[in-house]
Image (cartoon, rainbow, N blue to C red; front, side):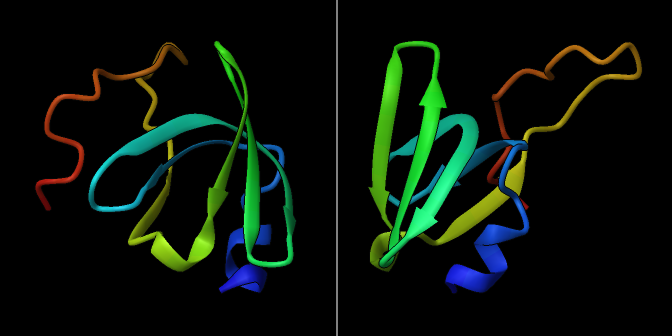
Length: 73
């Protein structure tokens, strides 16, 4: 799993654990932990509980899309 998530380093992502989700820029992946830089500071996520990782969707003008309904696929 770590190798797959390392492909997202430096990108704006959403990481979902099934219970909650965190969005921000993926900074570091190490020892089954991911570190994200968010608007409210640095957050660390245990990768054992991650169910979805995706790059944050953008509109044509480069702005973020709304988070409503992102995980309904």
